Image 1 (cartoon, rainbow, N blue to C red):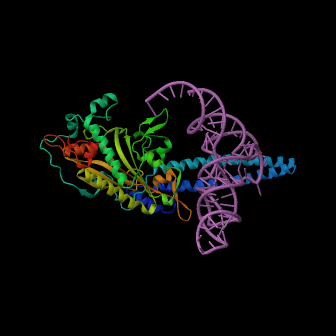
Image 2: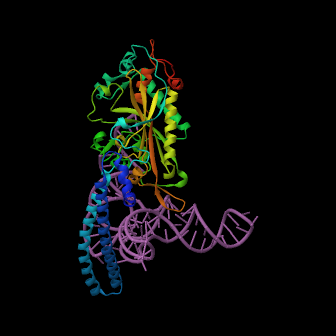
Image 3: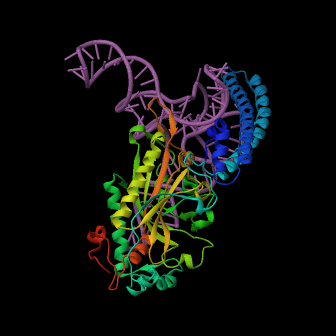
Amino acid sequence: MLTLQAIRNNTQEIIDRLAKRGHDRSGDIQEVLRLDEQKRASQTSLEQKLAASNNIAKEIGDLFKAGKKEKADARKEESVALKEQIKGLETELAELEEQLKQKMYEIPNAPSEQVKYGKTPEENETVFEWGTEPVIPADAKPHWDLTTQYKLVDFELGNKITGAGFPVYTGKGARLQRALINFFLDEALKAGYYEVQPPIFVNEASGYGTGQLPDKEGQMYHSTIDNLYAIPTAEVPITNIYRDVILREDELPIKNVGYTPCFRREAGSYGSHVRGLNRLHQFDKVEIVQISKPENSYEALEGMLEHVKGLMQKLGLKFRILRLCGGDMGFASALTYDFEAWSGAQQKWLEVSSTSNFETFQANRLKCRYKTKDGKNELVHTLNGSALALPRIVACLLENNQDETGIKMPECLHPYLGFDRI
RNA sequence: GGAGAAAUGGCAGAGCGGUUGAAUGCGGCAGUCUUGAAAACUGUUUUAGUGAAAGCUAACGGGGGUUCGAAUCCCUCUUUCUCCGCCA
């Protein structure tokens, strides 16, 4: 969530930045300011009453010690009367705080300077392109045929065991999953990331911490009996490591990488564009997460982009990088770059990574701060990116590398695979 | 799952109704001494809100209650430890 400080001090700037998402938020911002003012007024009068009450309690203590019981009893009555007023003010304050919090939760992050106004994905800007059109046979097959032909993924079996969107990887298909995970993790380690393996269920507080709750409640699998959520991305548990934490300046930047399966309900998405591996309820992803000082976060984002570029180039996949327009960005993001790989057989771009800077939006919810040289606590910036999500990478590798006799695997995977062709 | 014990500042650990935001020790920071360091000594050392500041308010695992007054009493939840059961 945005900081009240920013809304109060840079009201117009925040309104202008939010407008890039395609909706005018000035009404919400004014409402926040109004609630904030009311809240502080209510708080001030409550605190005055509390101070008075504390003083009386102290005096009563002294009177008892001095043996002046009657006087003490008289003051008690005063205190009881004050308490009534305090109760009323406490209720009022709690209500105002709740309203303010709800309002704050509804407001998305303010896009950064570099983000352009826009409402639809068509308005995203391509900022980088690499690779050449793959050379594939005239009768090239889409991956959902290749996976069947070479027995790499069994969708039917997944339907039987769990349901649609939960594929079973088999034989060389399973081996390819494992190879990609290890390759991605090893590359991240080489780039200075620290490996963690977090839980894949998180509690409610973690869901709020990174902004999935309350915004995307319906998109997560929810075990209601334990009130735990299956993670939609490793971003959630890995970033929540730093919830309610005050970091030392010399600990920054923090660079973590983790592999997890990811779970998405994807409520309401059906049709041919979700065929095969294009969209799943369970998939594997290696995620990189950074915690950075505010002044370094955009540099950190560049570093993450370079890292993901390197992966795509080693895999030899034609790709492009898009800078998302305001309307296509996620709720919590200040700036997002999407990586899209070209699928030769489907003749379309598939999103394989989303890399974002959240500035202080998550840190504010997480209460993740660092202590500056002069001893002040300041909110950190958080960033994360997929490096990479597996299914669409697999789709592109299979489709783009197919020939008459099989599918060749990129060299970088050979040591992990133990074979070079499928 | 059953029985019992516990949760206090960066860490260890007192306090168990009335100047206790919290003793003491360790650690951290600053200073004295020293050519420098160590030792010793002195001082300092949580966070949030509000306010121009002084100050005021809140926080002793979370939430609720009793009381004029709660770290201290009661209820509840969570977590940890010990024992039993179950188990990859």
